[in-house]
Image (cartoon, rainbow over all chains, first blue to last red):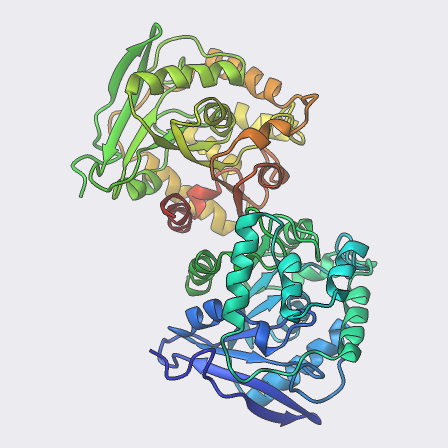
Length: 283
Length: 283
């Protein structure tokens, strides 16, 4: 058993490029596997990673969670393009000093994950892209108004915003969502919520990424790493068809879509996702 | 270890509805799992099932392979609608007398598998649909001319026709195809090749199934069983987008698409397919 878990790993800090990055690193160093680094979604911080998933992976590899610039306890200014956010992530990874990593990017984190994988083919061995899409994907230049409302809504406990965003409206999916909330609430010391300023910058970055590119999806052909693309059957944030488009244009990608699920399908089926992601990472 | 394997299980015969069905039944009866019945593809017979897959499943469940009416060593006339082919399959299953089964349907076999699952919800527990599509799916009313040519081509060893049909043109995929051919050639006593008359009837059946239906894909909403939909990244027989359409319209379906692969993706990645199909069947 690893000494530290998702709930007990200390938050550490690493200063580089004028930014103090908050991160957590835990898990089994002796599993003979490269560490898995998680790239977080829009309005997410260290508190919205799912311990069922991170602790699952941590049983036989190291796991690294971090707040990118301007997020949570990390300093610096949140950037308003995916390319600039990717550059900040690369600064963090360089300072962390790992020779090789696997990356799991969720939502907007899957967008900058694509760029980091393209820029650093020697560093990034394999890539898991969950609930995300390609540059200029379908319906990605702006959030649907009904989805934007869900991100704007105020709750007594604000993390309840994730129930309609990450899960489907069905009873089983919402019940899985409640379990996810219970899991992410377990850790005692909490991260700093994402500021309105950071959310504005990141919303602009996602919108810019969603603009159709004159080269279409050609950039994906250069992404040579094996990729596992995962999504729910009806992602209301980044439409599910974009996961199919990623699989069709990447040279070496496997696609998995789950039933009756949304933007956070891996939080709905954490055990199945873990088993399948391991099959992919450990082949 | 099961006493009989794919290569040693005797071909047995079962007479019902005026048809003598040829079948093989083998595997572990004590695994506590329902038997898995395979529905075969266009121009396939008992010899084109992959022993890497059937023996894999047989380690902890029973497996049933059969020739439908007019195929291989089964008598009767091959039918020219998917509905009629499904009715023949139901005759066979009724005579076999199993209370509950899982079904793996490949290509055209996945078309009649949908109808059998719809007609017999108490019999069919779970469904795996590989390289197939919905009624009236995209580009399914007729074979592409380039694909029809591949089915018409004569070879010294005729099973080589499957290399360009089931596998992608890449070197790794073709190498996996050669291994598949080696596997399916191992059994000594061979099944009877599919006759030209049967192929004509089945081609008509597939064409009729491919005609757009006035209700679109609405029939899929009534298919209540959990379904695993699997395909290659570029299926030249039943375009890969049809697997995505199946997943999007079935009430409880998971989709898996493999990289650099075609209509027989499960033959290209038999171990990965087995692991994932087990995760699905055994949940």
